[in-house]
Amino acid sequence: MKISIVIPILNEAATISTLLSHLIYNTTNNENVLEIIVVDGGSIDKSHETVNQFSSQQNSIVKLIHSNKGRAKQLNAGAKAAKGEILYFLHADSYPPKGYDQDIIKEIEKDNNAGCFRMKFDYKHPWLLFLGWLTQFQSKRCRGGDQSQFITKQLFEEINGYDESYVVYEDNDLVDRLFDINEFVIIPKYVITSARRYREIGVWRLQYHFLNIHMRRWMGASSEDLYRYYKDKVVS
Image (cartoon, rainbow, N blue to C red):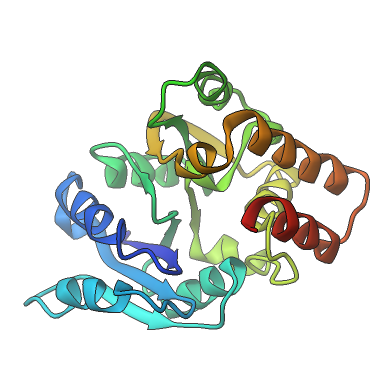
């Protein structure tokens, strides 16, 4: 079985080179990863040039494709283009552990068709350490896109992929559906993810907004309502 890694980006010139190098040099077996598909949603920085430096190399497994803006749309576009039997969705500022490829394949061979890694932030704030500690538990409330997501392409297609009506919360929606059919496992190794937005906005302020988004979703808010709140409170 082969893995297709899918990375959605938008103006990630500052981080994507480091991530691509990390993915290439931290595989157990180069043959396990068939391709790394970078899906651009309309970057206006030098993201294209950076990715093309990798994709233009001889025998490169890095590919750059384009889609409409929106992480769910970009993730689905990458999945559609993927040729591997296993999809591995990864944020541009999250770094999986050494040997991540073998860890994922071992779970698939045990008929665990979807799941994620645990997660730690690269910032030693007490609250962020606590959030990372929570990711060890088998609960959908402790999940998030920063932990990355692996899933067989067959299962991904069976559940109709990411719901593109979500501009935010698309990762959680997918996880909710996977938990509903008992198709989720947590690999006891850690993805290291950037706390850059927590640094920019403030740990407590950003966490308040994220909790507010979760509460609104649990109370039945639409995808449009969630996006309006996110755009107003987090992005702006």
